[in-house]
Image (cartoon, rainbow, N blue to C red; front, side, top):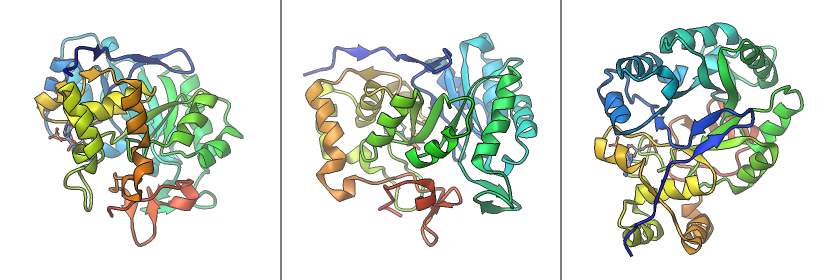
Length: 321
Ligand code: A2P
């Protein structure tokens, strides 16, 4: 069977009515930190949603590429994130992101990058070293009230940390951005977020190719995904992204290669059997139920983003690190 049914990239309506394109160009880990060349290509092939962060140190170049495109800045959707070092200086950090992007308009979506803050290079869980994430969120809510950001959300939150956050949150996060792909679909978190009207975005939706032991993502060589890709005459990457978007998640795949950039915007509609098969991959064997994006993971301490996996409430760990 050759694919004839190309899925139009949907937009997601967030819980405050703001709409967001479901495929973003991810930009972490040194992607796009020099020139705007690859970002210009991404804009040319059709990307209008860019996912950046203060921690990635490329907000400036993302803003530059958008300004250089000659298109109205309002055609774009920009997500950026509050860095871990900034939990105690939220308003200042927001202004720095706004200035770095320099778009003369509000930021579309601003996420708390990790629940854990860090001061003087040391991660903490809360007082006395720094604020709790509840307090950090309260400060983010104040920025939202100022009208300079259209939606606020979180990243790397679990059911446990979201439950903790929601006890004090005045504004329900619009988005929770987490690692997600067929090896770590986070079904329970997805169901929880759906129930709470928190949209789930998957980062590293192709499995990450950076980090210890990850030179080629196992997602891209997975036998089940390969068979489905063959049936549709598309790449495995396109199948992984199509599956994610079809289940109502958005995705932020990175690519600096124009062909793959284009592929990742060209999704196909999967049959129910195919969706069921992909949903079942992580249940088939343990090695296919794992986190893959281990850049922020410290094996010796079993921490990610400075917090133990237990404290993060992450029940799926890393097998490749
Ligand atoms: P490239 O820039 O050469 O395309 P992540 O999962 O963290 O988003 O990383 C994506 C990785 O997968 C990048 O190394 C990227 O490399 C590669 N990649 C992006 N799109 C595809 C695709 N459709 N098929 C295979 N590899 C891809």
